[in-house]
Image (cartoon, rainbow over all chains, first blue to last red):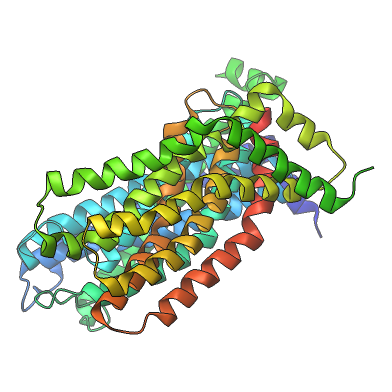
Length: 245
Length: 226
C-alpha cells in the first residue's frame, strides 16, 4: 500500500510521471483561464456600485487564494521532506517558494489597482491587506534563506524549518492583525466581500479559481522538474535524457 | 557525567560570565535603544501630546530593533571559536543547552532593555498608567523575541552575511507580539483593562518557550552543516 509513497520519493519516477501529466494540466489551465477571463471580463454583468472596475476580482481572488494555499503547500512539502527525508519533497518546497511570493505580489498589486477606483486610494492598512503583506515578507525570508546556502540539501532543510515556524505563526499573525484592525478601524471605508455576489458574476470567478489552481499545479511541476534536473544532473538517467534530446 | 541541571546551569553561568567580561557588547544594544528613541522627537515633533500618542509603539519598535541587533551574536561567537560544536557533541539534549543559551542571552540583552524602558517612557512623556503594562509586556515580549530569534540565529549562524538575513527572517514573526504589546500599553493609557491582551502575550511567550528551543536545536544542526 505504501509503495506509491516510496516511489514518489524517487525523483526519476516523478519526472517521468509528471511529464505525462503536464500537457493535460497545460490544456486545462489554458482552457479554464481563457474561458473564465472572457466570460468574466466580457459577459458577466456590471456591478451596480463599482461598475466595470470590479472585474479585477477575477484575477485578484484566485491569486489571493493560491498565495495562502501556496504557503501551506510549501510547509507541508517541507515537513514531509524533514520527517521522511524525502528528496523530492525538498525540491517541491524550493520550487513552491518563488511561485507563492509571485502570487502574493499579484494579489497585493491587483488589490491596490482595485482600491484606487473603489476606495480612492491605492493602499490602506486594512487587516487583510496587512496580513498579505506579512505573508509576502515570510515568502521573501524563505527565498532569501534558500539562496544563501552553498548546498541545496542544507538550504532545503533550513527553509523547511523556517516554513514550519512560519506556518505555526500564520494563524496567530492573521488573528492578531485582524484584532489590531478592529481596534484602529477607520470608519470611512467598508470592505464588502464576495458572499453577496450574483451567480452570474460568481460562476466565471469559480472557473477562474479552478484555472488558477491548474496553472499553479502546472508551474509547480515545471519548477520542480527543473529543480530535479539541476540536482540530479550527475546521475546517469539525466545524462541519458540530455543526450537523447 | 554531568547531570542535566548541571549542564543547564553550567551553560548559563559560562555565557553570563563571558557577557560580563565584554561589557561593551552588553551596553551597545542599550545605547542603540536610547539613540533610536532620541531620534523620534528630533524627527517628528517634540510636542508632549504627539510624543505621548506615539510612545507605546515607538518604545516597542525600538526595543524590538535593539534585541534584533544583539541576536546575531547568540550563537556566532561560539560557532567561530568552536565551542558550539562541542555543545552539540555533548551527551545532554541539545534543546536544553540551547534553552540555557537563550536564557543567558535574554538576561544580558532583553532584561536591560526592559529595565531601561521606563526611562524612555519618561522621555517620550508616556502617561503614567502606561508604565506597568509597558514593563510587564516587554518582559514577556523580549522573551519571545529572544526565543523566536534563536531559530533564525541558528539557521544563519554559519553564513557570512547572516545578520541582515536574520532580521529579514524573524521580523515578520514578531508581528503578533508587537501588536499585543503596544495595544496593552495603549489600553492602559486609555483607561481600559489590559488583562486580556497581557494574557494573550503571556500565552504567546509560553507557547514559544515550548516550541522554540526544539526548533532552534533542529535549526542549529542544519545551520552548522551549511
